[in-house]
Image 1 (tube, one colour):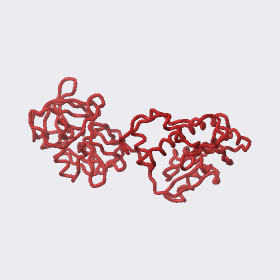
Image 2 (cartoon, helix red, strand yellow; image 1 turned 45 degrees about the vertical axis):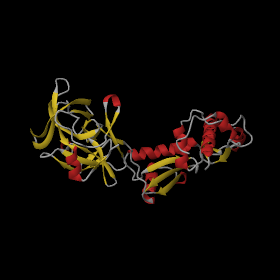
Image 3 (cartoon, helix red, strand yellow; image 1 turned 60 degrees about the vertical axis):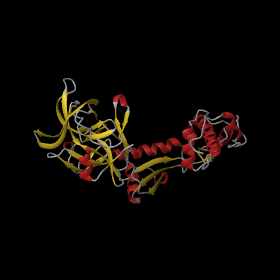
Length: 373
């Protein structure tokens, strides 16, 4: 059952091993690390569809395989061509270009596989592909050394795109396999209020993580970017933006993880529970990528501010300081989201006044759902 564990007992694990490798073992079968967290075992049961006993056996096998692989990587030298576990992780397969080394592999409890290319040769081919890609000579999305097939695999949307990368790199066609795939890797990031993001060379701060339908994203200040502008760290696109008049925007970040958190003091995370507006006189804190976590009190709601770029109305005035780069960052009172940083006066050295665009107006304007804990 999930959530029921105590620390693993080594003796219990040893009893379930049943010799996962070849009988010609050079040393006793290993037990899984008794310090393995119960949460790890629970997750492996859930995600790999295993029983508790199967998880324990697998962990013991993997521990033993890692030690054997490390030893064989050194002892096989130039002929080494990679290693991998079979489907149920009961056997370590070790590839070599030298049939004379079969006994060395077997003595480590592994099964030899004889191939024509060493790992060093395959790695050299991948390095050539990397060099071609750095020159912009590819539409492929992924390439890697595949020790199980003793080849380098290129994944691309079309066969032609994969072959074009191989040709640009000047590699042996027999060494490369092209796999047609729609896979388009992107970096995954947690969307956390107060974190930095970039628009070209400019920096602003995430307000709050949101979703619209199944699309994740975040709200921020409108003066940070216009509709269609791209962002990095995390990657995304401004879906809409209003400034002046208002000062709000939302950025869609497909593939990233919207969280119900704001960066608090010292790197702690503050959980957002809702977005009820706090009263004048209430304490309030803001999080931004320049000055971090700063607090003050709410002085007025519904203020109109005249910036050089134009007038913005409906802002909330506070005594929490901010500086350039904090724009768009989170204002939160207790656990309730309040708004995104618009502008202000002064700084965090000599006191300051800041204004934020209320978050509920942004959510309503764009049909967004605030991510809450």
